[in-house]
Image 1 (cartoon, rainbow, N blue to C red):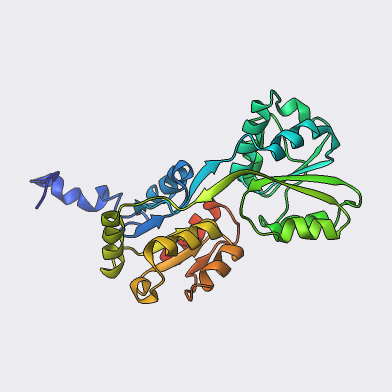
Image 2 (tube, rainbow, N blue to C red; image 1 turned 45 degrees about the horizontal axis):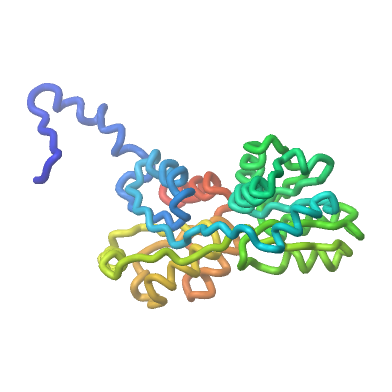
Length: 282
């Protein structure tokens, strides 16, 4: 027995069933790994922990701002030319407005422009800058934005997409095919975090010892970097389940020969949490 420990003696012990509230939480006894970037992992980790899960935070991506490029300077200078701005992530929003601030601009410069946000979290981030998204797709993916865009007349419109350095080209390519003039502006990049070998070996031991019940992935980058850090041996993860935030992330996982245990229907961390609850409560 290790500290801290509590010993209950006497009549109060008879209340054990009534006071074992924590043990009755739906994810009690489950160990879940969160792979989101460090800055964004806490909220999701707290959601799962509030349901009784033991959380292992193992960020597999690191966000690095990209600043002071000629492309950014030119884009801000010609800001009035854009008809639409499309934000595909929270990081795209926060980093874009930092770029504007470095050029002495703020959200007032976007007056009159239409804004498309990929989902509710991205929309909430825009509200921090006193902006409300004009359009949010029903499905929080690039494909969802494309379905939305098909209902808009984008022929001849100029669209700016502030995003990561490396991302799928499906969205800009499809918007161009609709007749829009699309500019992709890099405002951040995703990197693989630098972990000591000792830390990685410890994580691998947890997998081989079946100490991790579920790994959560919130983007394709978290999947790719996870295997970059820990290797691609499927046997190491044979006793672990995987939860993906959406179909694109799930497809990336399938590319490594592993099938998602659950994929969220609503592509948010709350949607993923609910799917995880369905997995263990049903």
